[in-house]
Length: 254
Image (tube, rainbow, N blue to C red; front, side, top):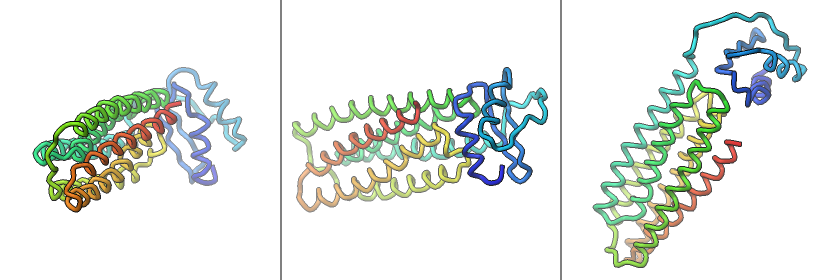
């Protein structure tokens, strides 16, 4: 291995071999340690096919099941899970009090993210196939949540709803925007950000940043137009974005 790009090439080549539990790259010494179960023939053949001069040095048994990289993943995921769940409670509470569908919708999106990060924790240390299954489950979960939310938007649109508290919408969304920015930064630091379940987490958080900005703009328009329509419109847009993100995640699971 002459450079980190070859590491990515090897990871892509070995992607889908369910017996692999972890890959430990030592680039300066051109060495790869593969933690796996079962026969090594398929793994060895895949590496040789890359024509990088790879060859098997040795094979030995190990009782190691936990890896430093996995521990770091868990720490990162627990951090973003805690942030998202806290803001789910904050936005749901303030959304109900302020009569803001935008905040309620965003809180549900935060709840969805919390579940996704929780599910991702189960994927840490698992096989690549398992992780892709996790990403698939996360995608379908988002679609279901978006449909339920869209129905609620329609109910409020045709019902007699009070004008939302625009100041609460703006202030809470600014804090949520800061929180999501922190989550995105934390996820970007992960060395395993290219894995399917970690990519899914970053997609959700990127969508959240866009949504927060939308709710802030909606709050300004609610005050300017003295109408609840901007709040309901942003609620609709939120769930459209959620569905789009879900389809992107489903592509990762293939």
